[in-house]
Image (cartoon, rainbow over all chains, first blue to last red; front, side, top):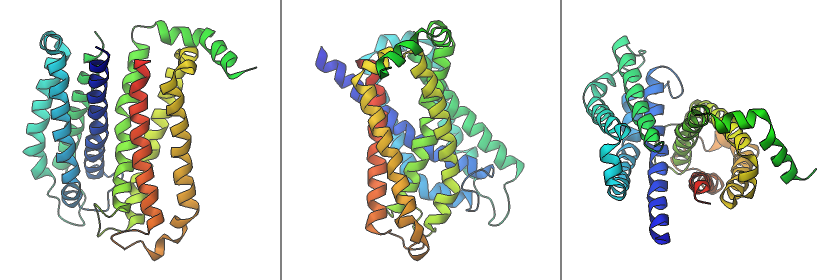
Length: 140
Length: 162
């Protein structure tokens, strides 16, 4: 039993480390579009540079998350926060790979359009929602 | 007055009790603490990866670091403040927790690392700013940074298990 407690803790830690990496890429790209942080580089280039980290940490999140669900399957199934998190996660991924992608195409030297900035805000909000819902799972 | 006595005194303050016994305050502060990891560690990892020549190889180090580090500092402020409140709420318990102690030790080293970096090798950044891969001292700083912050996150999670 003690062993499995630490196995669960290890998976949680991987989930947290991957969260740091994933969140970091999202923040740098989206805040950059909003003119905060890495703003002098075209967002499409920033996104392209950070893509390996984004994809790698996303995969790590999904794999570690799946293991966490396996360990607490019934709790997750019935927990409203988990369902909300999965719904928001689905929306966030969908948004990131569709609307957000086209919003990244900002001509060099020009500041982002309202549409691009709105996409950045929606992106940050959706992913923040995933994080908040994930945290809420722990509070039962 | 020993450190333990100070922690016990903190534990007895009304502020500490209020945070600890509230249904909302502690969870909210803890949520901020966990999510702001992205702003602190996530952004610094990106700067570290530039120093290691993994990403943004064609961007100057000073450009990447100069624009991203303000975000990192904002993250540090959020982590420090939320962490202080969390500690305040459970001062005596944290004092005895080995994971917490280890985390604090790592934090000190994680603070010294950039201090040394910025006052030595980074002073001459103009000479290696455009190099896709930075000098070995800068790469060492980056590896230490990535390792230390990962350790801090892991130790932070372990606190709940002791």
